[in-house]
Length: 323
Image 1 (cartoon, one colour):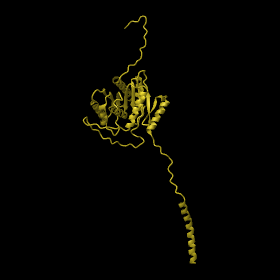
Image 2 (image 1 turned 90 degrees about the horizontal axis):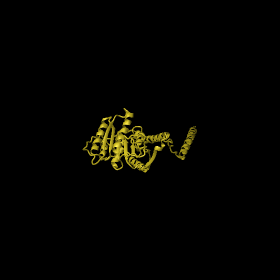
Image 3 (image 1 turned 30 degrees about the horizontal axis):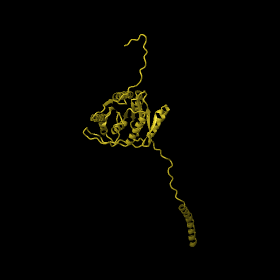
Image 4 (image 1 turned 90 degrees about the vertical axis):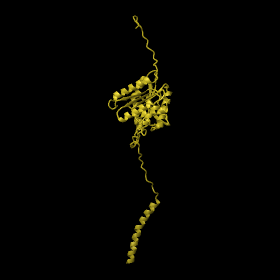
């Protein structure tokens, strides 16, 4: 009886073991399938590209596609907006540089100037400037040290963000403007961080411009306001420094710029520093004021070409009396 019971138990255990071993054998024989990667691609937003594309679309919708001029610098295309002078004899060409996270037709300062100056015999070219602050990335608190320098403190050699690319774009813009017959004179107009690029470019390339206009200059990190201001000490061309006196920092920065301009040696153009009300308080009036200041500065500090337009004939009547 015991033998039968023992044999019965062994038979049951053997029946349970065979299915388990076959499963293990099948698992060993089957190839290990790699984990399936996530086929969904993550789209990283590009605010700069989207902003420029939206601008191009808007210009085309408004029948202004003829102003779009795509140039190349360092093997990459970039957008410029070109407008020729609206008079017979051009005074020269104004190159406009926008501030950070803006575009070449930004409604504050850039667009009014680029559209108004052609009426006064200036061609205008507004350049796409690459973003400094990437809005798709986490915002980092800048570690720019507080500048406390004085006139006796030696200035440092500065390098601005994206400097090589921006300088290459400015040079490509100048070459393109010359190819269109604009060989008389070039004026750089910078707004915000664009003013920092315009100032630094002319300081590094003293023969490529005839005048410099700075509007509400902003210094990109990590360069300090003081170090950027010292660039004015080597600028030989006439300078218009137009700024908004809306903070203690803006006033301190303006003082440093004026001090550096006063250190210029030899024969230099006039340095004109003007303040304006805060743009947020009276935007319409400020735009008109900017236009008037820029136009007046150009008229007084650049070589003016006499408009060669013949005087219309005046038919004298029978009873004409000479005055």
